Length: 302
Image 1 (cartoon, one colour):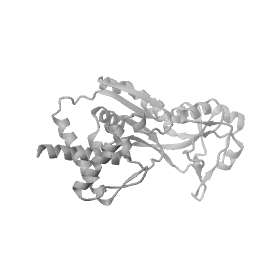
Image 2: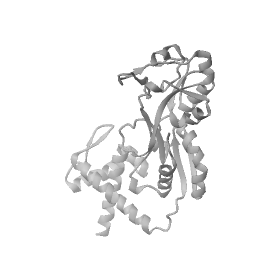
Image 3: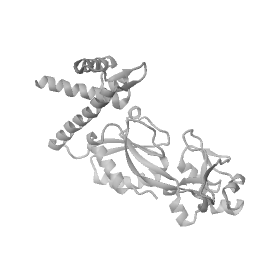
Image 4: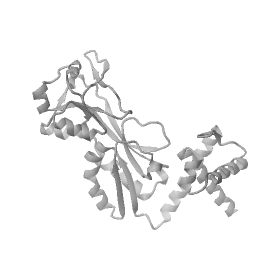
């Protein structure tokens, strides 16, 4: 009987990893098994249950309605097992290597200033931090946590929202003294507006007219950059006008280095920040939970 229970939990683990990672081959890599072994285990599970759990294609797997029910129950069962083991385990102290991937602006303005206090509170954690605006695959990058700004695409990643930051159009005083200050959105056509060179960003800048109708202005300029911090620095140097999250530029506005522009036409849209990770909130390693809890408690976006 005990052997049968162990096999059941093993089958559940393999099945859940296939669902979470989206393919048999990805689950095999994560579990250090061969894809054929994973496929055979899932096949035996389907035979034992008497139902199909997946609809398979050459590249993707899709849950059947029965598979969806079994996944939800299995994930809860495995999370309960992990929770029970954590509660009786002597190794509750967060420890080990924590791999974090963060958006550059968030990393510079929100994360780096808080890292010393986090590591002081958790001396057994070793931090491996990468700052990039490239959206990485957590599994391929071996990352525990990634910080993402903006709209989250549909995925099997679990997300914790860290906050939202209001968007604002800004320019340096030096730029405005030389080029003049735009008074309405249409005036931006005469100015150098800085943009991003990656495809996923929103192309237009939204503005609201007197009737409170929002429309997009398509900015043009002589410079495209790969991340918001590079844009901020170029705007501070007087190169052009930028539209960025207030969490990046509010200190510069407070010191007078940046002047907020066209605030009467600001639609009030915000940029959301999320921490995303693989797996389930109830079955994460102690080091990951400690980091996420610290972010939620200490990060405040403007």
